[in-house]
Amino acid sequence: MPSIHLPNIVPPKETMQRKAINLDQQEIKTAIQDIEKEFTKTTDHICEEQKDLKSLISKKDETMSRLEQENCTLQSEINGLKSRLYNMENISRSRNIELQSVPESQSENVLQLFKRLCSIIGVKMDDTNILACRRVAKMNAKSNRPRNILVTLSSQNLRDLVLSSTTRFNKSQSKDHTQMLNSSHLGISGEKTRIYITEHLSPECKHLYSETRRVAKEKEYKYVWVKFGKIYVRKNDECEAIQIKNVERLREI
Image 1: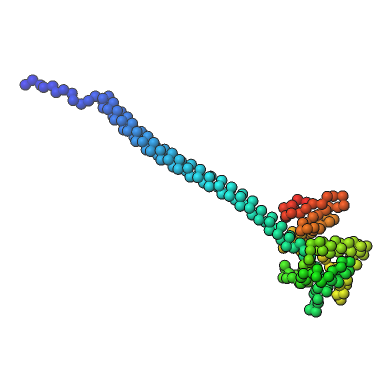
Image 2 (image 1 turned 90 degrees about the vertical axis):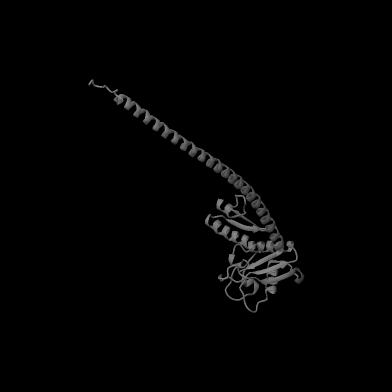
């Protein structure tokens, strides 16, 4: 019986390799396409988030800009109110003077003490010119200094006359500082203590004045004084006067 030859159905090795390569390439292509889709999806999401973030930042910037403008406006209004309050305080205190370091006693009559002081410095003072005369509470309750005597006069001109007359009296005694206005001039017994007559300053101005005196002493400024509620310093007789409006200005001298 003759032999039957069957066709060779086993693909050649090269064909199988080619198919395997094509299959791998297709899988790789599919994988790359999937990655590209995921990447595109991710980048689109990031872009949307960036847009939202930029929009949020823009709104925040607008809010901050608006708040800064409002803050500047409010600060300007506050400074204006401070200035008005300062002027009002000066006006309300413009007829007042303070007597500082006058020894206290239970039997004292502060009105008579003040009238005696006016007599010493050469100012004629009628009772009708004195609207009020009293001791006032200390700013520092722990201080051992006597309470100040606050005097309200009938006019600012009279107040200024008392102040200028006190200055002239003390200058006349400049050769002997122990004879400057002191407790013995008022007939107060005991240890002689220097008495100071000053404008009636606000607590803030008093604090600034105290700091100014301290700094002026450290930096050897010759003169420190207050006039019409304003504080001035002067290095020496050749230098010009400098107005001290605040602590920042004080640091610059």
